Image (cartoon, rainbow, N blue to C red; front, top):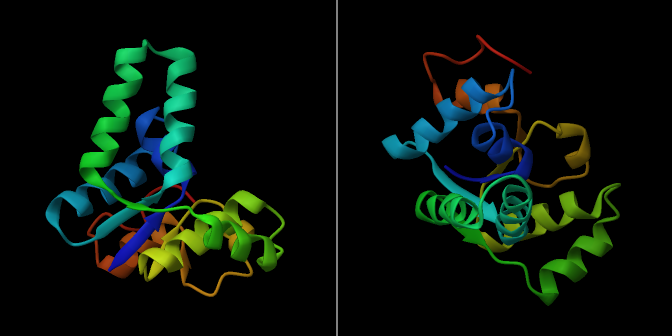
Length: 145
């Protein structure tokens, strides 16, 4: 299953955001096991670098980005993705960009903690717990929403 991870799920893990950290970490573990193919939108990479750069040293921010690039594929954002995202009329343009980048990358689903933001999505949208359950993870359903 090829899944685009929304920025909020990535940040949950990178900054240890409770109560979502453990569930996000379980998803990262599924990537390591090869049970899931993870993709992040190109805008997620720049957002992570920007946010990390505000609180961490530049070298640490670059290391976080390098780690993400090692673990995840990248869903590119180009003119066509940005234009199609405008046409979707999602309440949040960034969510629309993630959705269209997911489609362009061949992803089969999106994982996010903001399912409402993707209510107009044409791809299946999972919360982290729902995705773990779909994968049959033994830890699924024990944590946050």
